[in-house]
Length: 193
Image (tube, rainbow, N blue to C red; front, side):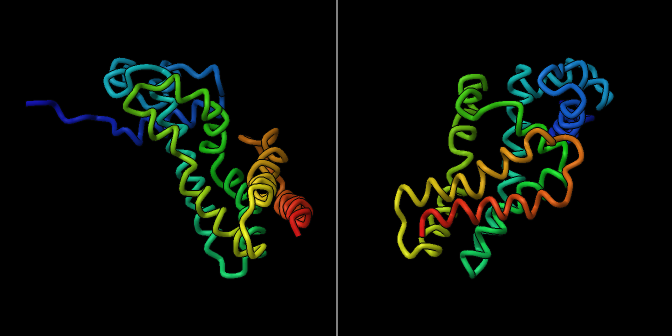
């Protein structure tokens, strides 16, 4: 009979997130083991490699981040939805510093090649649902979806706000960045009118 597991996957990932804030890309399995209070072998029993562990943390953090984006995209007024999408980024990163820092560990296109085969599809398709939601919001905002308008919306609501706050991720993100991100998004979105 197998022994019950003392540490859950979420406890290990929580410890990895905490270690990531302190050590970022230099975080080791040993750092995580020290925080969770487990031997490194227990972590390797669950995650075959460092990239498997931190890839799982990255996917979990991205999925948590996407929850708010999906909610924002359902706001009835598409202009308000776009503003909420842009505002979500600094708010999420401020309220969830461990997840925010973990999201900076990898670029999705690079991580696909680093994780075990069993995780590749999760990494490769992680943005699919929010891309569909953004396309719908773009269509509602402009009346018609075009590639250019989608690219503008992607820049306005994700890439731009994230670029503005990325240097602050893991630390204090001032509240005025919410308005800065929204103002930037509105300016970019106006290019599609």
